[in-house]
Length: 84
Image 1 (cartoon, helix red, strand yellow):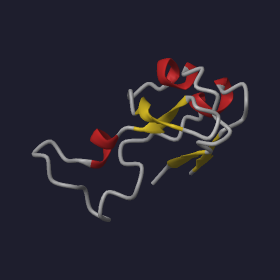
Image 2 (cartoon, rainbow, N blue to C red):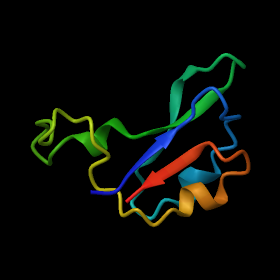
Image 3 (tube, rainbow, N blue to C red):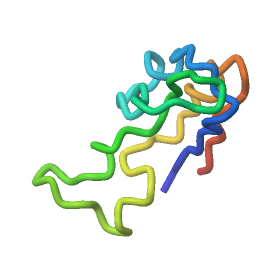
Image 4 (cartoon, rainbow, N blue to C red):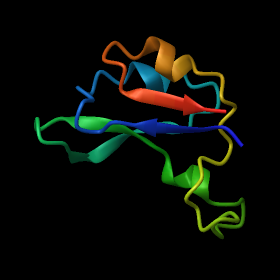
């Protein structure tokens, strides 16, 4: 299953990845990184089934990710890595 990782400390919070994710799985975090910026993170909702129960694997996988890499391509700081 495809998944992404985001380097939160490197992210400057431009949030371009949010608008390019075809499944809307990336959101703006309400937390701050060391630079004092709200970074992009994988949506917690993506870890839940429609009935609100965590998906198989304890919700640790990037469920729903297509692996299209649009987020990684558009990221100007290369903060996102896509694994297929």
